[in-house]
Picture 1: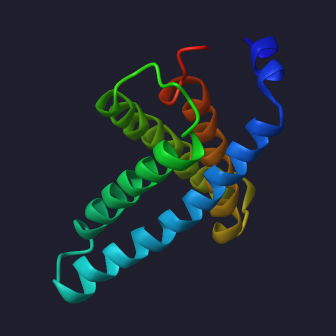
Picture 2 (picture 1 turned 180 degrees about the vertical axis):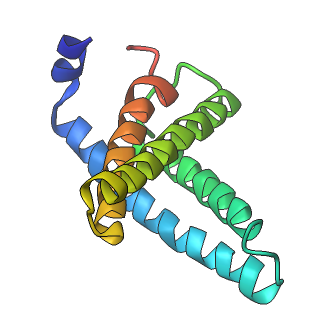
Length: 141
């Protein structure tokens, strides 16, 4: 599997990673806007409002990644199948982010915002790799 990964790292792979990062950054804006709307405007409790914000951001990121980041792939799976896989991979990325945030702050006394950035980066790597080799897998792979 490692050989398969190293064979795949080329200019297009790096370009997809950059696009993935841009999409993720735009997802932060969607997440923040939806959270503000549900909590700040509609008065939805903070325990509930992020569910909508995260769900919308993940969906928005999926649409952009599907139509931009991996647009050149001859997709092996249907749109809904890719969407389902994307939500699963995003959940794993969130779990990695959460675990590293708590682990670095609790065990290594790393400042929580720095630990969060480390968690986000590791979650991003996980999400990208799952996107590349599982969610948006092309027929040729």
